[in-house]
Image (cartoon, rainbow, N blue to C red; front, side, top):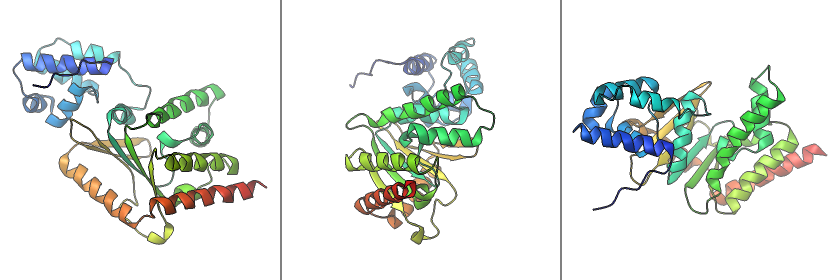
Length: 274
């Protein structure tokens, strides 16, 4: 029998306590999910500490387990620095063994340099202070630690060519940003593919997409739009997302061709600075 790993983080402790209370109440994940109005897969993510329930989910958990507001109160102490629609994604990517991301027009957050992220925040925050921008940049670029480990997770990055051509922050910022992506790819820390303009219409033309896989839980998919995002664990939706990703990947340039294109785009921005 495999011994369960002892929780290490507050979120993992939250999940472990949920598992203990659920088993004590003699409920399966499916039975608790029915009372919370969510899938048993989502309950498994709660119990593994990969995701936190929303406040209304926590209230239903307390009612189902007769825990007198315990899980709702504890949830208040685990508030994320990320926006509501992204908080669960930030937790999940730290636990994933495989991350496959597709970016339609902007460099994925986990790969952004400080100055690239700053230019993005400046673009949609008309009334900002330097301090607010600094805080937002720190929160955003902290996610790059995901790539500091030598093995986990395996990261695939699929970029629409628009990502390379959209001038965010000016030539100097783009040179630094594209070189960072190319350096990570050359170092073997991510698998890089670019979907060229010549590919025409494709399956992900309307959305950013991130796929995440785990050792001991079902995969998930995340799509994002303006001020909103949707994290999906429904097997049919995740499978459809995986299929769309595979279709786009099949039309993309090879890893080496993509690396050469990113390097060439960086040199074009170098020329623009002169």
